Structure formats: structure tokens, C-alpha cells
Length: 340
Image 1 (tube, rainbow, N blue to C red):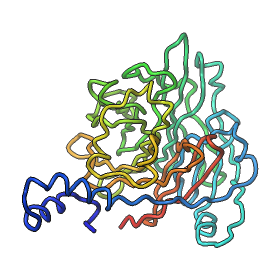
Image 2 (image 1 turned 90 degrees about the vertical axis):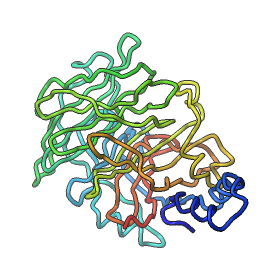
Image 3 (image 1 turned 45 degrees about the horizontal axis):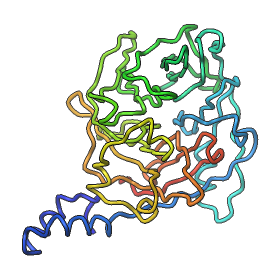
């Protein structure tokens, strides 16, 4: 009804065409619910080792035309699926399961290097280089790390180039939460702590790591629930993020009022559940990260329970690819959305 769900247009409509003016907040509230539309993701069937829940896919990114799926647990490999295979699956009425290719991933033995090492959290490529983030829990405290690697364009072998990862201090201590996502901005890497709500952080800044391994901060808005992965920056300096809530996390996250759903409304399945599965858009402007005016994309909820979406990339301008870790299984999905 209104472009990109931008309620600036709703306000104009109400102001000029619907009297008395004091009714406008009620009208906006009603229209927001009418306008909010959820999108049902399309499953991309998989087969092979990746379907084993122990793989726990924790991040996605593109390397050229190959989708890279990062297992949380060290196994000595990455998974890759070509873009052609993905399009073939999406466009088929009866898609055949895809068996991702395993490519070598050479790393130090982090289980010996990092006390309490728990796994890999994200991966981000820039050219033939990449970064990963790592998570550990030691003596009751969470620890987050970043490491740099290179990939051979011919063999697709990926390798971490230094033995010791760089530890990045935690903004707050919340069990099982560290730096879940990485965004490349020129020569810098912006890391995203996954919990950024008003009731748990006075300021929701994120760390910025330079190639020289200096660490600074960038301003970031308070966002309730979790941020579990981000896409790359586009030509407009915008990117999307998974904004997710499993209701069982409310005790840890202590969510404040959800201003996003208050502004844009909720889709049908979200109105019936405490769970949140949506994509929200940010922009990088003037040295700050800010929410854009674009309407969030709600993913239609599964009646059987929450899906822990931990990987996100754009698929050209057709929509998004999303992946779960192991809850409720190893899922890869397509969220159709015109991104023109």
C-alpha cells in the first residue's frame, strides 16, 4: 500500500485525508497491522554430511559464485554450494537435494590454543582473504576472538595465516553470547555482538578491527533480541541483519519495548507468538550504524517451534539465503524479496 512500509506516507495520508486528526495514531496502528506481510521461506533440500546436526552451520558468505557455509565445529573443511545449484533448486518445482562440496579448511587446533574454546561463529570474505570469529567460555566468562585467513582461488583451500587469534573484549557478559557476525568495510572489520538491547547495554557500540589489528568503536542503535548474522555492504552502504528471538532467551536478553514492531506492526504468525524471525536493514553513514526506514522482513513462523537462523546472505536482487545451526535441523532456505 505504501512504499517500503514507510510510515511517513501514512502520516501524510492521515493528516490530509482522515479527520479528526486525533485519530491518526489509532489509524496508523490499524494500517500497520494490515500492511505487515510475512514471507514464507522456501526450503532448499540438502543431503550429505551437512545434514548432521553436529555440523552446526554458524555463518554464510559468498566467495565469488560459491556460497560458503561455515560449520561451528572444527572439522578441517568448509561447505560450498555453487550459485547455479542454488538457482536450479529454487526454480524447480521438485528440487533434488544438494550435497555441498567439502573444501579444505586449515586452522590451528583452537581447542588447545584457546581455553574453553566452543566454536566458530562467522566468516566474511574480501577478495582472496577472509576473517572468522571464534567463541570461548572460560571460568564462567565469555570470550570473543577474530582470526585472518587466505583462500586459494584454484583449489578453494582456505587457511588461517597466524597461529594466535586476536581477542576482542566483551561489551557485557551474557552466557553463550559473543561476536556472531563480521562485516567488511574497506580495510576494517566491524564485529557484531549479538545482544544489543536497552536493558542490557548502556551503549550498543560495536568493535572495529583494522588490518593493523587496532581496535576502535562504532556507534550502533539499541536493537532488542539477537543479531545473528549480517550481509555484505551494498553500493548504498546498507546491509541486512537477522533479528531473532527464541522465547526461551527472554530471561537472558531482558528485552525492552520492541520499537520496530510498534512502528511497522506484526504479521499473522508473529501476532500469535513471542518468537521473532525477521530481517532488518541498517546503513553505514557518517561513521555510525543506523537503522534505515525500510520495513523489516518478517519470516513466517513455524508452528512447531523457533528456527535458530544463524547465516544470511543476499542472493543477487532476488532475496536472501538463510541457514540454521541445528535447531530444528540443518536448514537452508530462500526468502524471496525484490531488492531492487
